[in-house]
Length: 398
Ligand SMILES: Nc1nc2c(ncn2[C@@H]2O[C@H](COP(=O)(O)OP(=O)(O)OP(=O)(O)O)[C@@H](O)[C@H]2O)c(=O)[nH]1
Ligand SMILES: [Mg+2]
Image 1 (tube, protein in one colour):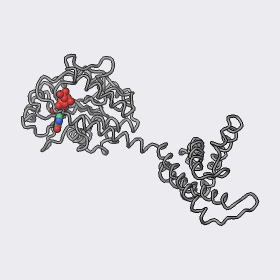
Image 2 (cartoon, rainbow, N blue to C red; image 1 turned 180 degrees about the vertical axis):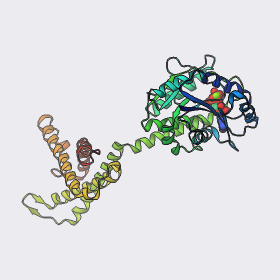
Image 3 (cartoon, helix red, strand yellow; image 1 turned 120 degrees about the vertical axis):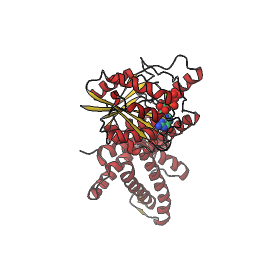
Image 4 (cartoon, rainbow, N blue to C red; image 1 turned 60 degrees about the vertical axis):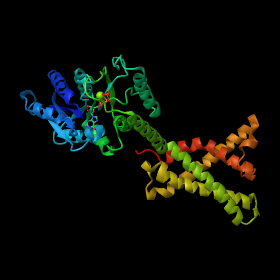
């Protein structure tokens, strides 16, 4: 039988912990397919919450089902969960853990629904306040309602992931597979409060795990003090913005554009260099200038090939012995991009009279407008190049 452990982090929850444990435990009786345990993670609460837990552990109904992990100092919500999960998936041999608050904000009658979803193949299940059937307390003040809703909307917008409706909630079921993939990347100090929830979920999403939501009605704590403050909001926002920037920087199209931009610079700079060193000659149609232009295009091609190989397509990096042939192919596709530019320019001229705008510097070079022509030309060729790189040069593994 598979094992699920409900992890309850506590910090000064002396008045809440007993009713929480007993209500969670009462709901275990309807779960038949899972062996259910509770693990309380207490950071040596000044109000001695752990003493209450130790006393309960001796009660017959809780024996060997109620575990306590104590941290010598306050490690924060994220730290407590990471330590709790390490123990739960480690020597307690859980297959699934739950995140569950000690203040009875989370409805324990929903626990079987989470497990049903896991049995159906979901790898992580979120309790959600913002899907039909879920909710936040009616009596929340205007400010708090707006903050919670707007907070989630901001998270969904910044992370551009609208399939998840509740990013900040702390009621979740997590399978061992997800934990093993995500936990090594979580540094608990950086993930304060809500940021831990957002960060853990964001990483699970990025890794492509199957995640679904179960609605629940959030209830306000009636006893004890909330630990969430304004610094949690600031921390969550700055995390999301950092993540967003990182995601953009890591995006293949961004890298491809950067490499293309560098290639353009290489071409412009080397053209000036080659013009200075290549002697003026006129042999049939080839002049010193045409030759220098050709060399500068080749310099850009070398730069594009090398940078795309080690950066843009680092995940599909070519092997040394593939390089010569692929470099020839790369030259062909680059020539293709120039050809496209010429065709576009010719059609443009015939049909729209755009020839002046789109001519290549080879044909009508003048430094000021030439810069513009190179830019426009490269832009048109970009679509072809990106396609060709993906389809031919750095083809996805067979
Ligand atoms: N072990 C441990 N638990 C913590 C820590 N901070 C918060 N918790 C627990 O984490 C759970 C959630 O914290 P809450 O303060 O209720 O946060 P919240 O639910 O967003 O805020 P409220 O809605 O006001 O209750 C509670 O069970 C807390 O006792 C911590 O530093 N260490
Ligand atoms: Mg709470």
